Image (cartoon, rainbow, N blue to C red; front, side, top):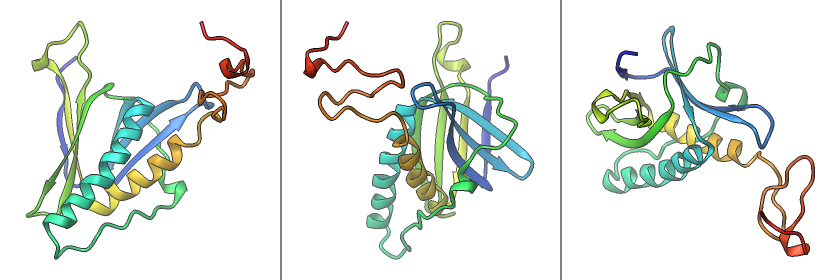
Length: 175
């Protein structure tokens, strides 16, 4: 498969979403520029990390550039869902953030995960250029989305599967 190296500048939409039941959900990052839709497979922990990173990143931008207006992270849930086609270009490895002061755009940089079949030079990279408000909304929605998983056992802190939970703190055991 040819190496993917793409700039979507600027995106019309930038969202994260999950498909499936809690405990077996699959997470995606998706952007759209006009009629071009780009979807990337991500892990739940990557979504959570992006969301925490986005908050810190946007706060740093405002601190370094006091004249700019803070980003608005409000969103409408229906608009934060992924749209077909859901055909991921690759699975995300490294994810980073950058900022273009001249354009006042944030850049979400996603690199393909390194596998046994690929070298560093073969890895794909996509740069999603977006407004700070689009990025803030992605962060706020991602926090909400990742928190909708399985309930957490108050005793041991482990997720409770749908079929029940044998809590180690209540004389259960872990394998």
